[in-house]
Length: 137
Image (cartoon, rainbow, N blue to C red):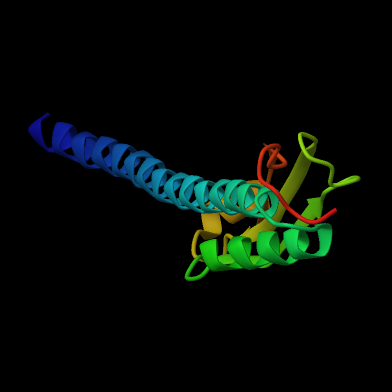
């Protein structure tokens, strides 16, 4: 009777250890996704605020893109792109910066089976174009 209980305990431990391992790996993948999503959010916000302080629309687009790419330096996001939509670029108007990219799930094969090869990350941030700053028309 004792020998049978010992075998049962080993089987139970193996099942529980497998489930805990899956849970731990899922938490690591989720942490990676959240961390890179935060980087994309930050890039969009920084791009919007940098563009809103620029003196002209072309300068706003360039400043926004530069700020976004600098914010993403060192991240693991692939195919990163930022779009600045300034509209008419009038004082007091709102401009929008959209940042997006993909996170490769190659290091997490089990999660990759559920979510796919890459996870799409996107964020849109808006900023008020500097209403009080003097600039040439």
